[in-house]
Length: 93
Image (tube, rainbow, N blue to C red; front, side):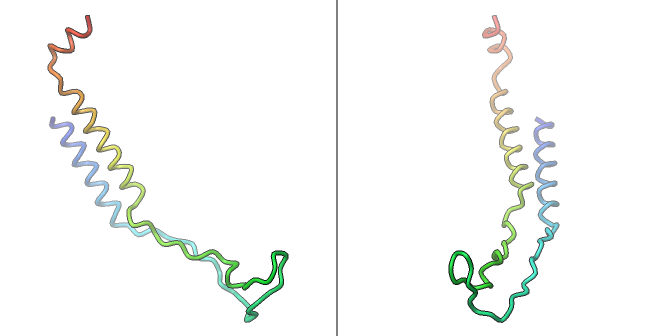
């Protein structure tokens, strides 16, 4: 039980530390000419729409999500292992 508690505290500590770091996002240059409409192969388009919209950073870091998944799987394994030892010996025969 102490091992499980230690693993849970370790995962929670890593998750809380990982939430403290800010990620770096790449920004695309926005050098758009003053032309409002341009004739292209697909028809008339605005050059401002050629650049992708800036992506918002995720609210929850992917490492935190993976730590939560690991925690849930460890707790599930611990819950399944709680059967008495005598029951395991009877089913093994």
